[in-house]
Image (cartoon, rainbow, N blue to C red):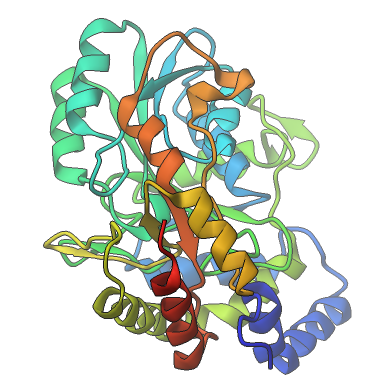
Amino acid sequence: MALYPEFPAEDQRHHHEALMLAVQRVLQSGRFILGEEVKAFEAEFASFLGGGHAVGVASGTDAIELLLRAKEIGAGDGVVVPALAPSAVAAAVRRAGARVVLGDVEDEILTLCPQSLREVLKRQRGIKAVLAVHLYGHPCDWKALEEVCEGHGVLLIEDASQAHGSRFEQKAVGTLGKASVWSFYPTKNLGALGDAGVVWTSEAGLAEKLRCLREYGWRQRHLSELPGINSRLDEMQAAMLRVKLPSLSAQIAKRRELASRYLSRLRGLRLPVVREGCEHAFHQFVIRSEHRDGLQAHLKHRGVPSAVLYPAALHQQPAFACVESFPVAEKAVREVLSLPLHPYLSELAIEAVCAAVEEFHP
């Protein structure tokens, strides 16, 4: 086995036999769209979160669009998004017809800053929702964000696409509010073998509306009651996710164990923090260095993979450019570097990464 195996490939290898049986089960059923596998996964994922309703959709991006549509947030409405976030988040807001409004992030955990959000809501009119992204697997400052949103009558939505297995004050991330969105892109902590997503909600009525919207607005086949879209979680991806879900908790525990080894060994860098009351899922292990590019080049020379997530803040990208400045996000994108971390890495691999990092002297 390679010292640094790729997570999706190694995860597929680990579950290979069960995945093949699941594929055979789907093929034998002859049902490939919104069948029993989807229903079962929706129930199992909701149970994993502790209750509520999960609605399977085609991707995490679609999950955001559909939830905004279900909440009748669209043309002319503003949706606040952290300036440091995947561009898919902002793209989904645009697809729903809404305006992307940016807020800066907290320096410590790089999620949406409550004070920045407060300032945005004071100066901007027409804001209807806030997307709080639990970036890299650490929960955002939910209570502070919730207080700000409640004070302005704005809907607060969780984007938990990088936070499978995270907890905030002993409650599963994704269930902190009334609705959340999830991605199961292959590199996520819980990954499909293609695109897949879920909208979770505690409200049965909202779940029913989402099921209608994900399939052309149908309640009755071929009769559109709402202006829906085609965003259906297919049976094959649902079956793959059902195979992997039972091992997710153990995999998160392994991620935390390996992260603790990094935290105890590495020095001279800004390391991830875990705030009191939070449980980090470590989708990414993100360090920060003023000499990031040199460090990454050094690691590459030593054969150590690394990644920059993300190389540009949203307002620095042409599609979402604006005249405002978001200094914390701007500084972060110059410094962040993800080191290898997933459940299939060995302790030897972690030690090798640490040794390579320690050799770097800018």
